[in-house]
Image (cartoon, rainbow, N blue to C red; front, side, top):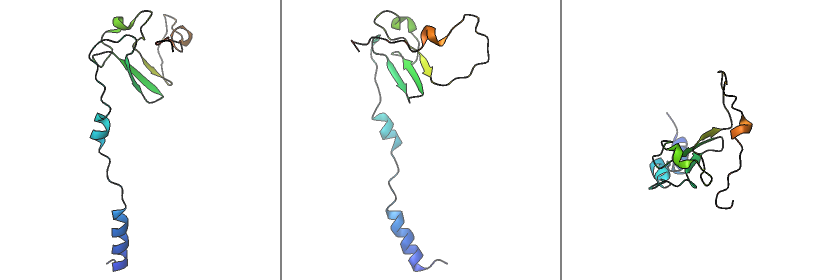
Length: 106
């Protein structure tokens, strides 16, 4: 049986505990809404190591709408990866990745 002092100590520290995070409110506070194709401004979400760029459908359904001189291509990028299959087309990082794209003069 715990002494009264232990109960008081536990009760005092329980009152200092932070309130739980309302994760639904936190996430829905940042809900993007796309209503039209924006080839110069697709939706990209990521965490610094992984990025997914989406069209108005929320996926990469219409990549042709994002091809062209003023468009930012739809893609999925990561700074990590693993592959164990042949590369008969000769794709390389130099041919696609790390290219600069002009976005409204920036």
